[in-house]
Picture 1 (cartoon, rainbow, N blue to C red):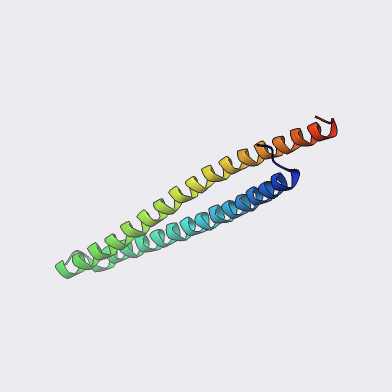
Picture 2: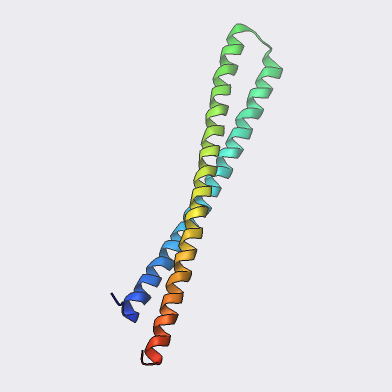
Length: 117
C-alpha cells in the first residue's frame, strides 16, 4: 500500500511531536530523580544529626527508625525515577530510529516521484 507524501509528512510530524514529548518527559523524570535524591540526602542528614544529638534511648531509637523508613522510601522513589528516566531514554532512541526510517522512506518516495517511477 503506497502512502502519499502528505500522509508521510503528517506521520513524520507526529513522530517528531512524540519525540519532543518523550524528550520533555525524560527531562521531567531526571528533575524528579534529582529532587528525590536531594530529599533522600536531606532525610539522611537529619537522621544522622538525630543519632548524634539524641543518643540511643528507647524513644529516640523509635523516632530514628521512623526517620530511616522515610529515608529508604525517598531512596526507592529516586531509584524508580531513575529507572523511568532510563526507559524514557530508550523510548526516545527508538523514536529517533523511527524518524530516520520515515525520513528515508520520504526521500526514496520523492526520488521515485521525480524519476517518474
